[in-house]
Amino acid sequence: MATLSLAAILAEPARRHPDRIALVEGDLRLSFRELWHQARAQGAALAELGVRPGDRVAMMAPNTAEFPRAYFAILAAGGVVVPVHLLLSADEVEHVLRDSGATLLLCHPAQAATGAAAAEAAGVRMLRLGDEGELEVLARATEPLASYATRDADDPAVVFYTSGTTGVPKGAVLSHFNLVMNATVNAFDANDVRPDDIALGALPLFHAFGQTVSMNSTWRAGATLVLLPRFDAARAIELMVEEEVNTFHGVPTMYVGLAAAAETAERLPRLRICISGGASLPVAVLERFEKAFGTPVYEGYGLSETSPTAAVNQPDFGTRPGSVGHPPWGVDVEIARADVDDRIELLPTGELGEVVVRGHNVFSGYLGRPEASAEALVDGWFRSGDLGTKDADGFLTIVDRKKDVIIRGGFNVYPREVEEVLMRHPAVAQTAVIGLPDPVHGEEVCAVVVPAAEATPETAGEIIAWSKEHLGRHKYPRLVEFIDAFPLGPSMKVLKRELRAHYGA
Image (cartoon, rainbow, N blue to C red; front, side, top):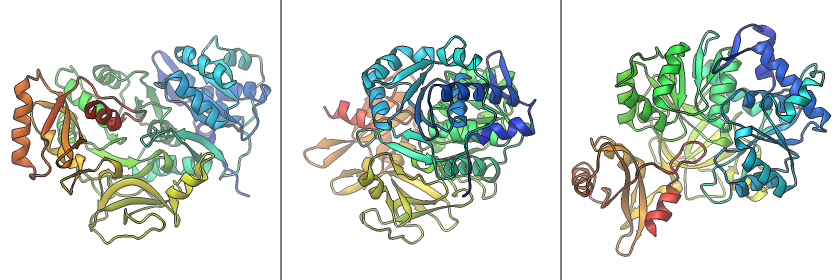
């Protein structure tokens, strides 16, 4: 029986490159040896508290050293990590604790009030993280684990709660094999991560993108991770210059901020690898960023259920703006008929359909939800719920979420296509296009806009008139609404359901 543990992501560089710097956070610098020692000490404390292999342990922490330390402590003890999104309410955290069957909650002091209320309601014990937290006090009095607990490759390692775009968040169960393989192919096949690379960890580590692509892929290659607890574009540029960061992973909103902040920055970092994911990156933003920083952006695509990377632009294949590239090594991505639920019918090249994925990255199912798992996993493929196309060169383009497509007067309108056009208007900093109920056309196209400068009532009319020239008659927005900032989900995706609820009312 093959055994494998995600804990090896930290244990192996600690064995191979013990003195190399693994983690930088503010003035703190930890070598791989030091960080793995601390994780094993906390792992021993968890075992003393009764955490057994297979037990689920929830965790709330920002991008500080407490996160990786506790994450690898849980894995070392053989537990299953349940990362909790930091913007959830106490009621929502309580749902995650109950639904996951977590026996313990590890909580950073910054989240202690929410965590304590949720833990009490769910009847789960909570321990504070940090230098004076209960877990650290226990760890100091305990002999560190000699190594990590033995796990089978298919045993659960992490349960990610999906952002609930379709209602109640579900726990996607990822195995040690899923996550070790995804980190490995991200580091060595999709990208060329080198041991002397220094990556900025600005993506939330509780989310699959930050966890796999920033933390685990970086350490799989024995490289250094610099943590930024709160993303601020100007501060990110300063920190990247100070720490000689050459690798950036971010979501489109971060690229928008960096391109703007670059205009007034004294110095810019010399970046070698930039990866975008989490939501589609408008081509106008990609062009603005590449012009400012002089480096290509490799846009990718993935979901919690696919560990997360399912496709990414890769140096081997070249980049194609507007596409999400090719699947990584050992993964297949195809386009299937979206209107057939009970089987997978693959479509010919170039046709629009549902994106389906198979490979070592596909999760084992939703925790305690056999019906939802059976709907998502069909004929050996994972149904993403996203619509896309694949061209003759194998490049995948994501058109939209199946649920976000607007049907106006019987015609399909894909919000992403409209957004790409609107992003080229000088008054538009960011936009999200939604469908609102309409008595005549069924749905009307509405553009919600974060304006680039002071927007006046006339600006809306200008944007509508301009988009009418650049889009088909059924596609251009008849409605434009201005907003200061978008509601964002855990992966920094714009929550279109909240926009629809607000403007639809």
